[in-house]
Length: 173
Ligand SMILES: [Zn+2]
Ligand SMILES: [Zn+2]
Image (cartoon, rainbow, N blue to C red; front, side):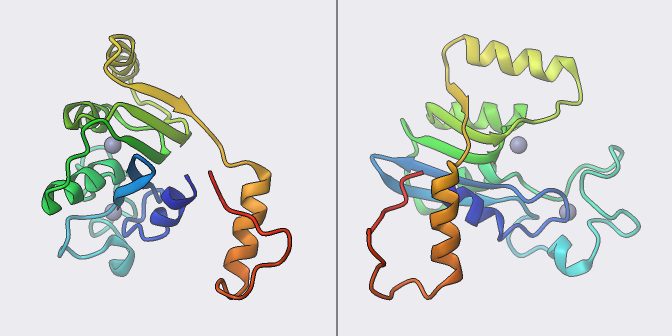
């Protein structure tokens, strides 16, 4: 989840920053963050998502320019020819219905997310729950422990590759 949070710092959309990491057998297969397709103008550079619309999620009349972090992580794996079948995805936000369907279709079996999604319609949450209840994918909310956060802050605030202070620790979340 720590890596997913770091991936979110790369978000190029002015809507909430979201990051995702796909992991299998303790190896990172792909990472993603939300933003317009590669090569398109970054919303963060332009200062708006569409002219006159400050954020991709500000006006329901306009479809978002951005792909979601989970979709981008799966697309990155596809682009590189990496199978995510049987993998786990960590995301900083609960997947939306579209991403949930994509996650299931790609063969990812487990989802860990940090922040629950405020769903716009009951229909969406019903559809998501139905997919989860069918046993297609396991979904669980998790949060970094305060210990991990403290250690991560220490890592980020100091030059990383100096001799470790005692006791040496490893971030596992
Ligand atoms: Zn945007
Ligand atoms: Zn999504």
